[in-house]
Length: 122
Image 1 (cartoon, rainbow, N blue to C red):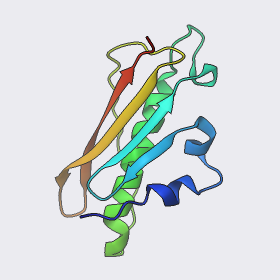
Image 2: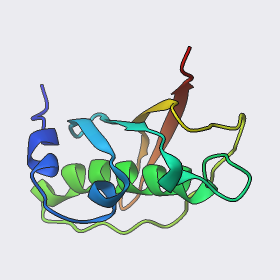
Image 3: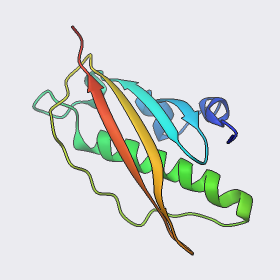
Image 4: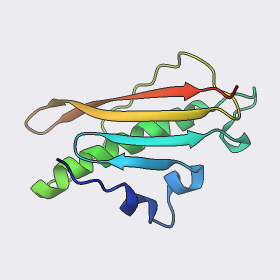
């Protein structure tokens, strides 16, 4: 079983995850999860979540997962591509749950997938 580094990430005093209020709930080589409750600071001018928030979550979770995979091997990581599809608008009060998993391990590349599911308030 992979070691969970989520508590160590939560202890970091600064950075984009901290600034956005993103809570990493699991961080292993096999899976990285987070939650975010949407507030006014996450919205664009039309009252829905700014696309950059979604992209930032994807970039962050993918980078964490890739680092947890590569660093024990003495390797470093850098993101090469981030593609986001917006299926439904999300508004204040919704809670986002995101899960990132690796899907392809190649010689010098690791590709993954992140799925975000919004839970809208009742």
